[in-house]
Length: 141
Image (cartoon, rainbow, N blue to C red; front, side, top):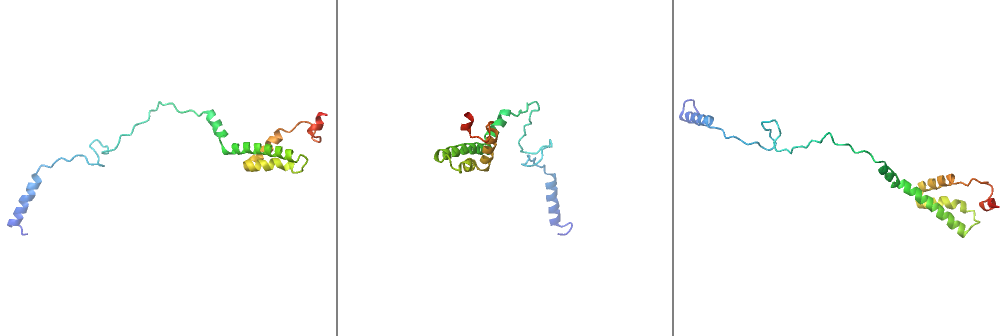
């Protein structure tokens, strides 16, 4: 379009009308920034009070966690299994040489490696104080 032509003048009038037209105010769009320098449409985060007392660790809970651990259960099962196996072998064959292997075998069957360790530790702690060469029946005499 040539400068000064009818088309150019019409286009100029159109642009002038668009420039002088009052703009419509837009509301805050989602994700935009408000005039107060806050993000639009975000939830307000609640602040934690600083004067709140901290939880103290409870010693009874620690004891419960130790008692409910799998290792302690296996040790207890091993000790029980050793006692049961020893009692059974002594009832079936009191003079058998297999008797000394009954306790570790029963502990392993019931509690695994932890059971063997637990039963051996308990047997070491509860060893009789008398003469080790004599059987318990002869000590009384």
